[in-house]
Image (cartoon, rainbow, N blue to C red; front, side):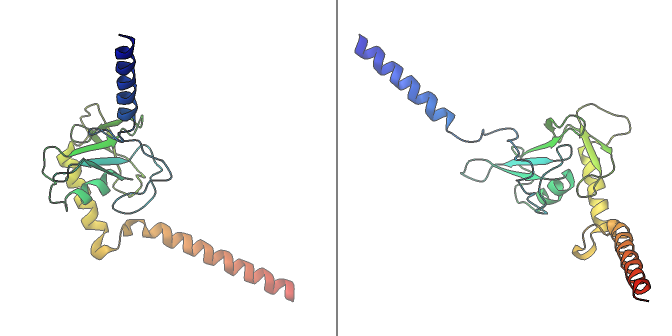
Length: 186
């Protein structure tokens, strides 16, 4: 009898250890290693916990795979080019812009917020909002932003004026420095 209990205990312990080592879960979002993981589409590092997204898809005859994105815009644009984009098993998760908690992207409400990582400027949250966009409307918004600002692969030219101003300020600083040096030499 003692021998039998010993085997049962050993088997239960082994089962527990193996289940703990099985890796990622097969549903839902996974842990993000902030400032270490990169966006699948734009390769930018994931650092803003309020705009990130994840997609879990199920390749044929394989375990599910999760890809991470820095902005819901990157997730939507990446997904539209995948052969399994309409598979009902595909899960899309987005961070709630208020809490950072993961919510189902298809059920979220999207509010136009400034300064999302890639300029699509949509913040998601779980509660309905009369001024918010549903997932289909959010996808349309993302497509419009992409068409307007990403012509021929030149991403987000709407941010160009800021870059130009920055360059102008740098140039002005260099000009002031060179004028100061000239004054010192005289």
